[in-house]
Image (tube, rainbow, N blue to C red; front, top):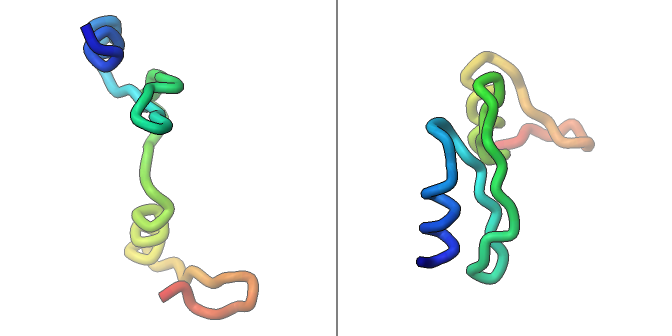
Length: 63
């Protein structure tokens, strides 16, 4: 059985965050119901859709 299969078979129902390095699993964490996982790009897009203006430290627009 592969590392991935053994991890998947041992997980409860729900969401899990799996971190891999060089093709190997280095950590697995259950994502709680009150947590959301997104890339930085997705988070910035959601903030802009909600009406926020994203600027960097030089006060230049994100996009």
